[in-house]
Image 1 (cartoon, helix red, strand yellow):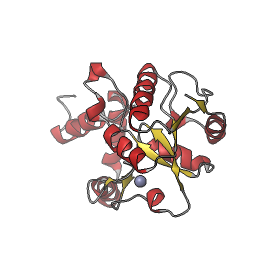
Image 2 (cartoon, rainbow, N blue to C red; image 1 turned 180 degrees about the vertical axis):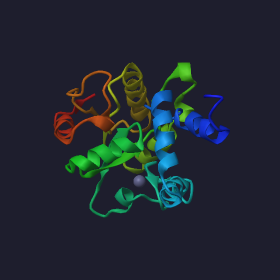
Image 3 (cartoon, protein in one colour; image 1 turned 120 degrees about the vertical axis):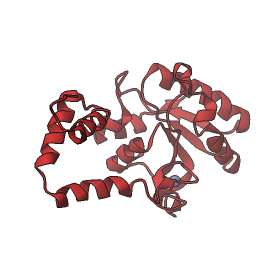
Image 4 (cartoon, protein in one colour; image 1 turned 135 degrees about the vertical axis):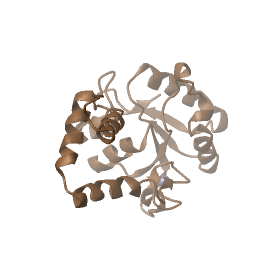
Length: 202
Ligand SMILES: [Zn+2]
């Protein structure tokens, strides 16, 4: 923030610098880039941002960000409902779908257990997952959480909870081809397909 700059510019820099991966320096560059743009270009950006605040919701079944009550995957007749891949967020679903090999459905948890950040089971879509398992007695739950300490702890917790509501469910975990600390969402398609194919009972 600089006292020589108009407050509108300072405000924009401040807002942009809060975006993930954008520091103060990048925020200043973006702000000055936008300053050079015409009103039409800026309107296009603001319209796109406003678009995600309107009429978007979570799929009632899997929690994926969606336009309707059910996402296209849950609406599809060709997906195997007895195979549920549990992921942290919607972008992980995008990564798996990009790999174009998985035919089951998903369940988006909305994060992982992290007591330090105040995220317990109630903050995640765990109850909704259990409800789905009661519906489908015979099913495979594929745990595809990011390889982190929180991800591992969440996987352990889920396994116990799943067994409580559906002891005939098979719980598997994607192969740890993904290095610790890496993200499912950034994994390349080949790695993801291999991790999925190499999944083991958990
Ligand atoms: Zn869905």
